[in-house]
Image (tube, rainbow, N blue to C red):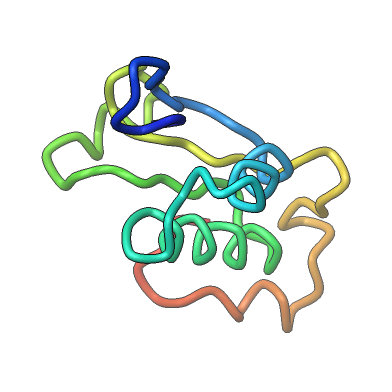
Length: 100
């Protein structure tokens, strides 16, 4: 959510890494809440990941299909390399359990 807990609160369903980084810098994701999740997602994408999803286990399938109520999908921005362009070192740097 953007502007969480305010009358302007709005769902954040799909964003680019650049957009997520901008919202993080603006203070939209507090350090004790969504901040660490967003930071981890951005690190994963910077290492060559295809998609980062922040959701609950029961909404995972929905999130992977891009459904609006399935959580937040963070996609690489146009300036980020695709996995096919990533070096072998980058390709192997993603933590286990992450989707490539």
